[in-house]
Amino acid sequence: MSSKEIDVVSVDDFDPQRALGLWHILATNLDMWKTKLAPTITYSIHDELPDGRIRINDLVEYYTKRLFAGFAPANIKGIDTQSANKSSRFQWRGNGLLKLFTSDFGIIFVDNETPADQPYQWIGTMFSSTLFTHAGVDLMTQYLTQKQELHDEQIRIASENGTLQTCDCCCDDQLLDDDMISCDNNHRFCQTCIRNYIETGFITNGECFFTCLNPTCKYEYSTSLMNQLLAPTLFSRLLIKIQQEELRLANIQNFEQCKYCTFGTSMTTFLIYG
Image (cartoon, rainbow, N blue to C red; front, side, top):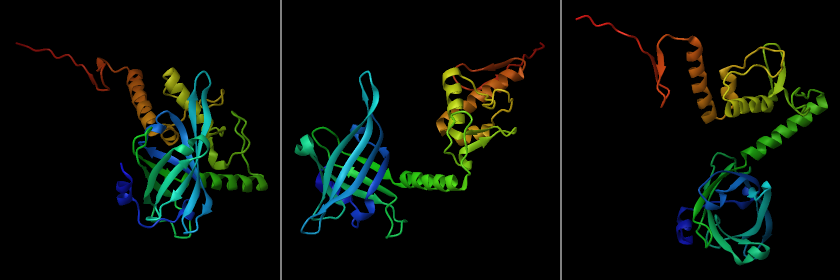
């Protein structure tokens, strides 16, 4: 995609000041992210040019897989220079050795619901193709950052009030009441521990029924709770497993299930009299 094509789809009104801060990339079709994890971009003001255009520091951070070392943090630094023709158009240029490389991009979407004096919550960026990457789009949000900031503030207030909770499994003592889950016998554990317990049991061991993390408790976590904790695709697989196991435990006479799908039926034998 050329710079002119990006010009056409870029928004007409864009305020760089409202885009400053940490952005999480939630969706993308850029090739560079295929082997990267948890990419974020942090924007900050670099300077203002004499003609009023803004230059923005562009810090890209992510995790990349290293041989024999697993995933390790990495970053790319650059500067975005605002176009003289359109406020939503920029040219990225790398820092250091990457200064030889540039990439044109435009802001093709900003949320319209955020008040004008508040930072954008969502933006979409479109990049032109380069020698190393194809053209593509990033959809980014600051909602996750603000959600974390709100959670940190709630932790601070709870600490001052002496209402922080402690998980008996991981011993994390910086938890809110909303972070905890109780069984009917009032055994309280954090959501993260229960989620990891269920995910590991299902994915690794094929289990589908999960009792309380307290080894002396026989309370069984409900499917509604698992639906709340698990990703939709994983919960869907778990639900099928639960249904299959319940049918097996029901010991229905002559029940047969297709080995290629989840369909099952009772194979009743009929006698035909001639």
